[in-house]
Length: 486
Image (cartoon, rainbow, N blue to C red; front, side):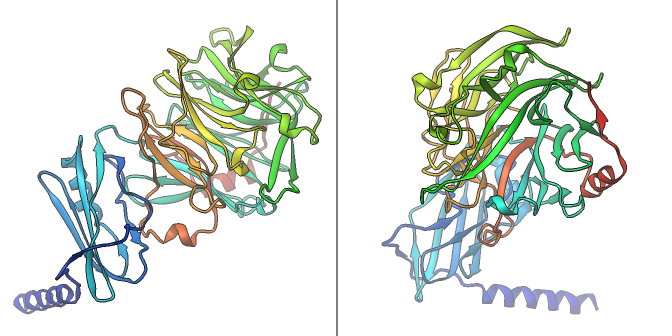
């Protein structure tokens, strides 16, 4: 019987191989190779999932791809225009190629003729990317914000799970899922609407908090964790959405008032400063420095809104913070002057090693998703030098970034594909601060991005997964009353 099954399996494998097209009489291609995702000549971490791709040259009905290192190789032969790499073989290939280069050769059959395209490379660096990225999966339009999920994806394979689903929370808006210290044991997001609050996760204990006191103009909006985990810094904003009449712009979102506040999660209190609560100034997007001694934020003088929204420009500022006493500093420094730079900055994020500050720059305003000109910039906090990140940015919105814990990788949301749907991209920063060409989050099936008519919004990296899921959030929403803060 064993012999029979062995013969049967051998026969099936032979038939499968016989049915798989193999290149013959190959000629050089006369046209450029068209891939999606555009993975040609990118730098990748040694722990990334397979870079599966589509060949979009017209008429491709079979493909052969060879990925070769100095000591190993992987070949894929398949019908159609889709290239899918086996996970285990891919992981083995990347492991032996750390610090070196992979050469990729694509041969495609078009109209019965096999064509060889010029090879390209994948530079495999030993600097690992944090294994998990969370994001909101949301319709790109403002009017359907209430159909969304927060998901967590493992970048080392294709495992994905739902952390929160507003179909399970009465349609409440959910936003701004962020980690503290790139750890799944410290995270938070806001659950808006009646009975909602900020969901805080500290070492698996979930709390629902009302981060507002009588002096604040609203509950907490945009926030970040202090490295110690006891404190969080937040903006408190009155947010107004409005629609453009210009054909090349859609939605503008701006604040009519915004201040900053620090939450003490241990003592349930909000800590305010008169320096960041000035009614004539808008303060927003606060974040802590890597050592927790500074708070970076964006600040703009209030203008007549909405008529003068195109004159609304934010500078990049900082103020000291004393964690031992829970007190603000007494002076605000300006690091990037909006008037001199003729632009507006938002979303500052400090690298975990404390060396760099990554932020988004647009022509004006504070909501860059629909600003086609929005781009990332990098400031060296040691020298003050600014890197325009030309290798990273595109001609569409590039924003909502997050650092990996090793400070060599960052992710961001970009609309470079079609201008409508945001996707998660990863970019490498070498030891000299030089950025490499970014690549999009790999998918088990490269057609997923074509078929997913939602944006991957506000991606945030974590070295470990969070210890909760959508059922936990459903229970917290239903059973817990939000804790008040004083």
